[in-house]
Amino acid sequence: MTASLSQQGQPKNRKPFPLHIVVFLAPAVVIYGLFMIYPLFDSLRLGFFVQVTRGVEQFVGTQNYLTLLTDEAILQPRLLNALKNSFLFFAVNMLVQNPIALFLAAALSTKTRGGLLYRVLIFSPAILSLAIAGFVWRLVLSPLWGVVYDILKALGLGAYAQPWLGLESTALITLALISAWQYLGIPMMLYFATLISIPNELFEAAYVDGATDWQIFWRIKLPLLMPMVGIVSLLTYIGNFNAFDVIFALKGADAGPNYASDTMMTFFYRTFFGSGFQKADPHMGAAVAGTMFVILLAGVLLYLLIRRRIRSYEL
Amino acid sequence: MPDGYQAVSYPDMQNLFTLGGSAVYPAGSWEISIFNQLVGDDFAIGAFPPPVPEEGADCFINDHMDMGMAMNADTQHPEEAQLFLEWLGSAEFAELWNNALPGFFAMSNHVVEASDPMVQVYAGWRQHCGSSPRNAYAIISRGEPNTDSELIRVTQLVMNGEMTPEEAGETVQAGLASWYEPQMGE
Figure (spheres, chains in turn yellow, green):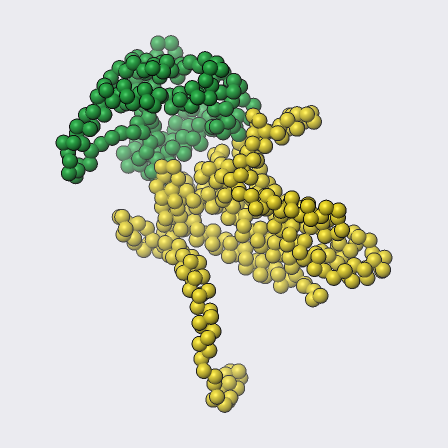
């Protein structure tokens, strides 16, 4: 109330409407709106319709979502399985890729001989096509000609050699680790960039005070890294909850064996586009996509809540 | 089956056989030209039909009807199309086709002298074995669950010993009956 009152009290010499702002914003707003916002809302809309006959849609409210959540014969078990697998895929990446990336970044941010070479080598898989990385890993892990088996046998650990990509119990974790390996360079570079931006004076002062390298890492570097840890976690969540390419490249759309590597994206792909002889059902597919959207949104909101609790330091 | 068969892919399997790493390879006649090329003169290959449950039982050969030809009812040239279709059913076409694409057979009953001995072996089974259809192509796979994918899934479970063939058959039938009208309520 007070704000509006004081505004009314101001003299009426209002500036003309800032047309140039609209002009400058227009290209981005139009392109982003046309290719991001409109498809997003249209796909959400699609989930509330069914196809009656060719080209004729009918509004059915939340029926698709209810079917998806309650069809105990097929859709509900597939959805729950895909949800579980998506979270597991994310968890493996979060718990393996993130700490290793942080460790490598911390190691490389100190003066290391050949540090640049290591950074290039660790980052290089991330620019490889996944089709190639997936093919290489399938060869490496192949029970027939895989080098892993020869190494394990040479070490006398042949009994531990398993066809990891083909077992229900290990297929998904193996795929998650391949993905974690391939994109390790990206969080590592983000951590690395943050670490080298920390002023040296802080470390020098800590040395003078008698701190060890270990203490410097835990007391100075890690607290200053926490905002980046949050961002990397969010990127890991968005990138890996949607995991598709590595699974599709190595296991196909049916995400075998017995749907053991089926994630939300492969489930969505089969439903929306159809797979093999299965007919595409864009409406049920859109309902799957809508479910994923809600889950991702919930995760992002959770991040925004947590982020406020992370203390950030001004340097 | 080889060690770690659960993670052996189709191309892996072809290579294992053609490199001499396995003695028996379950396949169809479509592999003939591939194997002729990859094996060459390294070793001789032969073929035997699917085993039967007991001696003297009827044998069946699976026919993959992947290349049916038909005439559009609204065509402007019905006579010409008919003439062409009749030629596709002739002995002349069967001989041309079966020899140009070893392992693929014209869908007519003409007995053709094939130049490839393996093709001759496969064709010979037709003389005394019945024909079984390709079981999940294509209309009965157009729903959810997709019968073709289901067959792949349950076959893997059977091969792993996690499901009996009877259970697998029941699973596929139940899946089909859940959406395919002609199979409902049976």
